Image (tube, one colour):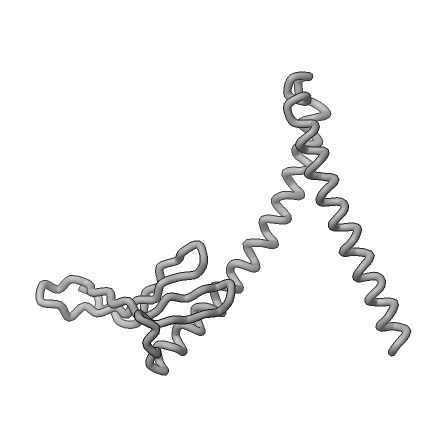
Length: 139
């Protein structure tokens, strides 16, 4: 069996669970000992029973947390780019393939969702423009 040492991280919706890998059991089975629960949203790293982590465990957990946050941020931007593609594909579908029944089913929800998105985008853009004006006036 390959020498397994180090840590294994089980991804969960809110972060992950960190396990120490050990393969020195009596039957040569891989042993996973839970070391910590990591929350990617608030950065909380807790040992079982809230007991403190060893410095090397804390460092491994912090490293995983930083890498996981980078992955999630990249996925989020990718999802937004995919949403733009889907909007374009939807426009093409509406123009070329949608039946009157299809349009009746999706028009109102699409218009409301697009209105909501547009309202937020316009407000955020105005906030950025105003902040840039204020910065230029001060600087």
